[in-house]
Length: 306
Image (spheres, rainbow, N blue to C red):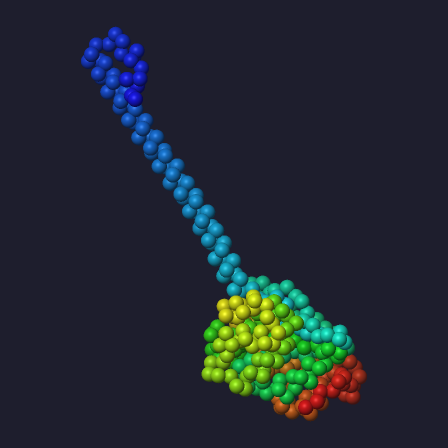
């Protein structure tokens, strides 16, 4: 109801003409106040929508950032870009580490080579040469670890192929990283299964679903591993780790990774024939003797056998 009708006392004593003029003026003032009220409400509504929109964008931005950032985080237990196995006389276990964060430099594992033969392997699971070396020597070298005579550090890389996330080299290395991230002690079994599968790989290598089946059969059955493999969760890390190895090989007389497999023992790269177990035994005896100060007659026990 308008002011002119709600309070008639303001019209008392006014001529008809003035009463009409006053009523029109009061109506005009009321309309103006209504327009201002509506304008304020529109401004408040728009401001609220803007605040909500900015908040939503901020949340979305954080989510996107965290998602993108996560693709560059390395797997847990591979801070050195490799996973280290040691033995206590009874069991072989993986060394636990935090994950390598984006932009960080890998931290090389420290080990007293005067007491333990330190074996480091850079391996591409698409490489026939890598499978050749492992088939001839892998079981013997791994037999050093449980009694504590040696350690083995595996560095999965993608040196073969085009380096894309679709290449088998990358996908197989990613599978190892997925296992290391969740069930690190199962990595050696998965490594051995990948080596065994190399000789019968189909065109393009095993599919991701086949890789899931392989790691499950090898004992890595955590449900997170399957989604990690099919989602290529660590493919960016695989590329980064491969590039870092191609630029520098820590604790080695080899300055850069150029071919696979690269086998480094107590800081010295093995350059003999990949399937010559006698040559490898001689090499081990030599490098272990120098590291322990025992001369060329020293060798860890047990001695590798063909």
